[in-house]
Image (cartoon, rainbow, N blue to C red; front, side, top):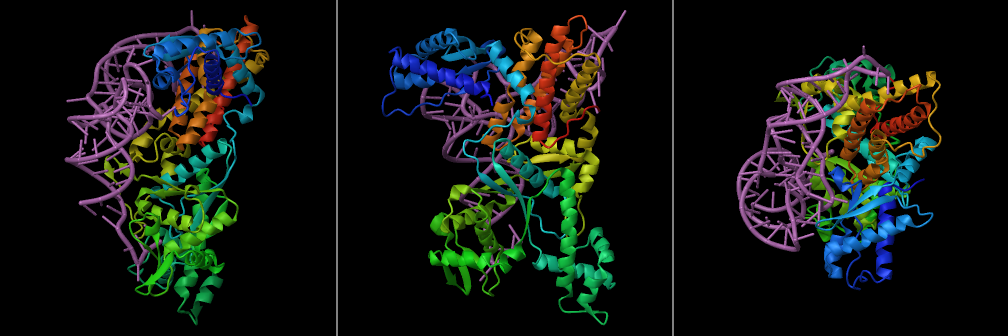
Length: 563
RNA sequence: GCGCCCGUAGCUCAGUGGAUAGAGCGUUAGGUUGCGGACCUAAAGGUCGUGGGUUCGAGUCCCGCCGGGCGCGCCA
């Protein structure tokens, strides 16, 4: 696998800097000075070259030299490096600019190697290997199975899945996990609601009232109903028994909705099972052995304040029942027992008050705190024609995720969430999303892909094959401009992995589509009068198509051959 | 009151301490005898909530204020 151009350039700068120091042109760093990271970035202005570095400005203070002077020395070494026989330096030119930037241009050869690499190994293009691959558990959605997923659950589903895809592209071994409570009071209330409808009574005050509850009542299997009744009268545990069935039924629906989104969970974990298998009790014993719990007012407390929390937290209520937090503690140990190196929780920002206790409990049990990570996403205001949509699952007033997708479409919805940072509170106007569907950037990107697919088909009919040797293929301005964008994908992925965000990926996809449309305008691919040039341009078009397809795949968005 | 998040173009949102702050939509003015016009070119549009500070350099980091969201349960 070829290192990214950014990495190649960074290495070249490193070599030039070392050469300057070894040759006495620049002083070595003082022993107490930290070694500055070599930043290589894409200048906004094309006149500033393909890449630039601010290393000279960073060295100015420790070296006690003017930035321009340092930049001049390093730039000279970069050019000398390039002119060495057999040099693989990707740098064509290095110019110094005030107040101390070094502006770099890439060689055609470096770009040709990148494009050739894409065509040789399309599947791995855009994947960046991890220095040390970790086994990562990502738990998200985790809505209790008391009703269908709503649009309120949408952001968690998309944010979680997008993060998983980014981590996978970054070489991590990812497990998608869904945690649900199928035994608590809420499930019992759901069961009571179903029982009430079946018995012709009104749904209880604390019950669930949506149309889906009536559907459930109609579908209760005979054996479940018979087990819950005696001589036609409901038994004591009828609500629980029917509730368990209903929860399982609802869970199937949730799974189907998520699959429809393109989100596939590897593991579904039941809270009840954690209790039954003793994970919760064993974890509490572990905390007790470490002196991290105490009893007060008849309840069992975790000394969260010992780890920086603002108050201690209840594990067992004074009536002996465990809190949700108790199960969370057991769940942490259960997850680590399966061999994960790192746990990520995707929670709505309304849960931020519970982050500290979770991580503190993990630390108290001996797990490194930094390997229990919580990613909070901000709330989405769903709006229709400017008015906020208020929802209540209990009252049966909500818009389901399935309805949203039927209106807006999976690709457009994925793009919407991928293009926004998860910490920003956002508005989702459903009418606007539908109205703008034809103007949505996602279709702009998909259109570019379909357009290339059409060209590739036509080229095949004309008997044109992509050029095998790309030497000189990127000399023209149209080719050079497009190739420079195409080659960036692995850098974009690297940045997304570090930031754990996807906005950069959607921005790149848009930029790539724009670059291709400009190429399409300026450079005709299929030209029987110029077979060599056609083959070269076709190779670049294919590389662009692969890049678009892999970028969209990274977001879980389809790349249509025609539209 | 305390804690966390947010405030950037008319709207929805990007912007690892770098050079003249960007994109999509919307608005305005143009463009195709040719590979897909779901396209392209250009223009207008900004006191980056606000006041200080840090430094060669701040939308970005620190502090104060203003405005908004969320949290501060033996709820989940």
